Image 1 (cartoon, helix red, strand yellow):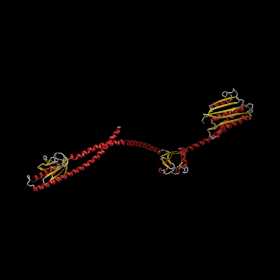
Image 2 (cartoon, one colour):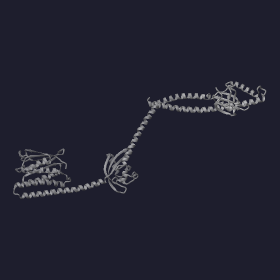
Image 3 (cartoon, one colour):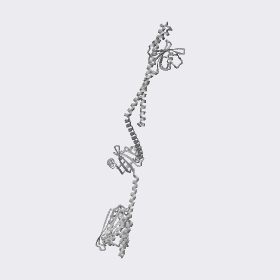
Length: 563
């Protein structure tokens, strides 16, 4: 048994003992008071009957015993003493006393206790002793608790005997009156203590498991209360945060009615909060009338969360765009949509201004590409005119090469001008047009030579597209000039494709006579091959490989750069 259990056991025993003692004490007190009243009445009746009897005897002796030695009074006393010699008495301490007042002394005529007749010594009238007799001799009749002639506390009935000028007292010691109640109290106390101890032991044996279960239940309740208080605290904090959020927040039931809204929603829409709680989504959002709400709810329940744009209507009829984040939640077997709505009016205006600005810049950029292309076409025309005026074949060849190079660059700007994306070029479309132009420019004087382009989903920025176009133009032009010196049929293939990790591979090959073994693109006097090498390793930051035999194969590898 632990210290706390022992304390509880002792406290329980003490409480039960005090309770039982209180009940027994009150019961004994009431019984004692009733018994005391009965004793008073019994003694009073006894004293009064004795006094009346003595007065009757006195009157008889006064009339008929006047010749008795000592007179009628002596005859009366003699008869009274004789009568009390055979009187059994009452109780263990009950007795009669008869006395008269002689001067300032109370002189006892006799006292009778269980057949014993004695005469006590006189008592001064002003003594604290013999209180009952002093009252009787003063002519008072009644009962009193006080000291008798022995100095013992007694319950006494006092009665004056008028015919004899004496007083009679019937009394019993208070110790005898109280004795049965003291014994009863001691016995009851002992039994009570035994019963309390036994009851406590039984209660502990029987009730301890119940108490333990009750304590466990109380502990569980305390934990539940603490948890509930913590939850309520968090709810208050959450409610405060929701109410003071800048966005509109609403808890929406499955039927589209509002279960709760925050203060921001009330301010934004211009409705009192109480009024919003009797409204629904269809009253505020024109894009969600009642007939489309079930489908939206089913979609939200399936997805769990949705983000979309809509429009809200204020109390004065004004509509404004909002972005809504809807979340499906279940709470206590009820389904809800916990939604946040943000006013995106300023964002929409900014998007419109940005779209207008981008449109303006797109138009401007298209115009730039268009004018660059036109200017390059003018340059091409000027080069063609100068070539025609020259009588030197070498000069004419130089002018033709320049026309091809400028044409390749002009074609980039023409393709961008016609493209939806002004930052990047679809190289497949560009390569097909470039090969057509090169075949048209060189094919007339070089027999039946075909140019076959192939590109697979390659997109390049403007700078890389110009550089790659320059490489293709130079290599295809060189193939037309040098790969087929005897004319006849021939084939030039141009392919470009991605190789992974933003890598691109360009291959230009022909089935002509092949490039001489002593030709090195990095160390050559030929301008075209120098341009190819410079573009491949410089502008594109790549590598170029040459394969000879059965024709010539140029392989260029490089990384795609962001536009």
